[in-house]
Length: 281
Image (cartoon, rainbow, N blue to C red; front, side, top):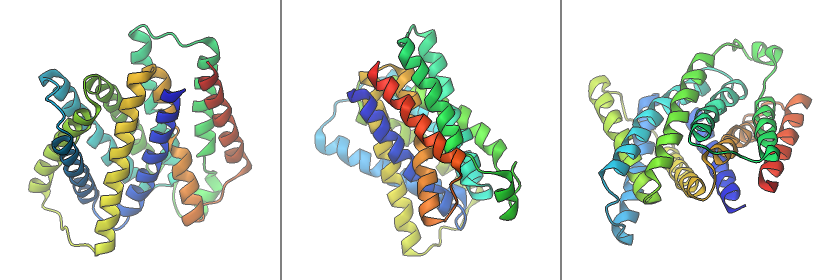
């Protein structure tokens, strides 16, 4: 139960961060959004490590974290770009299929969820797709093709899925060091990209504050996911963590006035039933 609650909290935090990221990339280059938010997260995590005196976890765990950072930053770049050029209600659910990667890895590692939990996993993934689904007519009415952002969403699904696997491995020794090493890998890769592309970092103070807030939500989600993976099956917590599009779409509906169709509302209910079955198992 604790692992499920942690994974759901991670999903809510990721979804909020993705909403902020999608909004930010509409006015700010995606590389700037990522570099500022990831750097903010890295500094915060470094402060926690220093102040709390977390011991060095070992080179292999740090390498897993760095691999999570590299794959994660590619996935986030694809996701934020997709959210900015397409409808959030199309891009977010495709990206949420990232859970398929750790689920497969979990099964290969010998994880065997109970039948009721497997049913819940299937319902949760079906539900989240329908919950975040947008109608073609609505997308066309807003001047956006249905296919806009789909390619980016597929890339983000694969890379974020790999990042979850590496992050879970890195967090086996220390969750805070896992997030710090992940952030270090991401910021290093982004720093190289910034040097090559030399984007403008000029932005209003409010936009900078949004990016720092994005980094906080993303950091919090990563820590919560590592804690969940340490207490439960990777396959199960990954599916629960993949429910982040629900919060993304709810925020888009509230602040961007994207309409929710009856099929989307049904999807939310189906996803919640899936969560209940997973927790019951």
